[in-house]
Length: 103
Image (cartoon, rainbow, N blue to C red; front, side, top):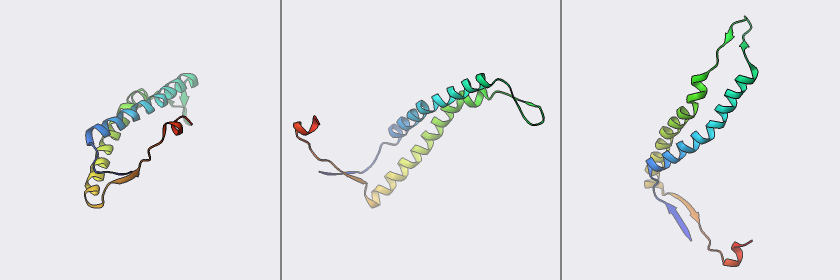
């Protein structure tokens, strides 16, 4: 069977993409925080001490999620606009027998 995606929901799709990106960014922030605790103080060539980037590591998942939401909304709008003229993404589905599904 041949199916075509005519349009996507802008808010719902972008929201799911943003939440996934937030969940995927949290471990990187945690590793960064743990890394700074393990390393201790960091100094530059001239001896000045580098301060811990709390704001960056704390708000990185939220920032990346927000940016991904905005960019995702734009991409979904562009897809819906283009699909009106060129058609949507096509995919094919094949029905399987019960014996084939167990393999």
